[in-house]
Amino acid sequence: MADFLNKKPSATYQSILNLKGDADADNQVVNSTLRYVEDGRGNESALKLSTGAIQVDNIKIDANIISSEDSNGHITLTPNGTGDVQLNTDTLQVGEGDAAGTIQSNGDYDLVLKTGNSTTGTITMTDGADGAITITPNGTGSVVMSKVDINAGTVDATIGGTSPAVGTFTTLTSEGDAAAQFDVKNSSSHQILTVKNDGSPDEVIVNEGGLGTVDFRVETTGEDHALFIDGDSNAVHINRGETAVEFKVGNVNDNIIHTDASGITFNTDQHSSNDFTVKCTSGARIPTPAKVLYVDANDGEVGIGCDPASTFHVHGHADKGDAVIKIEQSDVDDSFINFAGTSQTNSSGSLSSSAGESAAKSGAIKVDINGTAAWIRVYASAV
Image (spheres, rainbow, N blue to C red):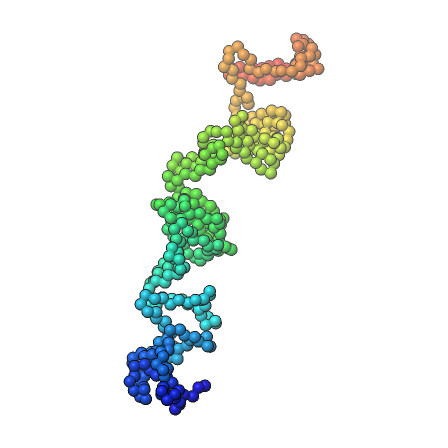
């Protein structure tokens, strides 16, 4: 350490350091006026002193610490005029290292984060209760976030500008078992689409509340109303435009219903387990109400009112009171029934050309002819 007490640099210069402007070099005092510190030759240094302040062009701190000696005192850096406090470092660290760090505005003002470019976007934290945090990209820039966790909150207002169609989502996920509901509403706050995972079961609902002006439509490459639910007319359409759209219904036993330009096919893949059943009320006057019409896919048999025991089996009810089968022929000169087969001259085939009447009569079958009962005599053989 240098000792300047009673030291003179030369006979010409009587002092080592002076405060500029003091006429009495032997009676220099520090007062309220900032004055340069100069050497004994009158050369100004970069330092100014007063009783209330120190002014210097550049400060170099050997221990890398600026601290306040006042109890809980702040350290204030105040630039001149419109100047700024500029920190020339790649990384700014705040906090004491053992607790959360805080950056806040000085007073009741907004806090704005931006880059040094004049055309940068901004992040603005609005001062005051219920103040918003606004993220504003520049120009056509976007706000890009790889993951957003809205904890018990809502996404409010329009996403993507003035038109809802501009905003897009890649994925919307409700994490874990937390109850959640996602709603898409129109300008009248009607729920167009509702996704719930807080019910039993969970639901995806279109047009909850049944608003008449809300329709549901699914398109294919060739039909823009392949599936259409008309909210106003309370109607469900499949292939409303009546174009070449195929409709298929399948189960574990292959395709069971298929519609196309050729018509409607049941059991398209001819699976033996795809029976066809039409049921009626349990009080209907048929033996088996659960099979008013039944097609056995495995045996290729059709039953009406019963399980078929032959290719075509009709079973009437005991209390019906009329014929099991009624055949009406509107053409006056055409047959009621055409029996087609290979004719034989005896009883060896399903048809016989024999006109013999010598065989024993084995019974008769009751029929109605225009409502009048009659009997058809049955012979034991065709000859």
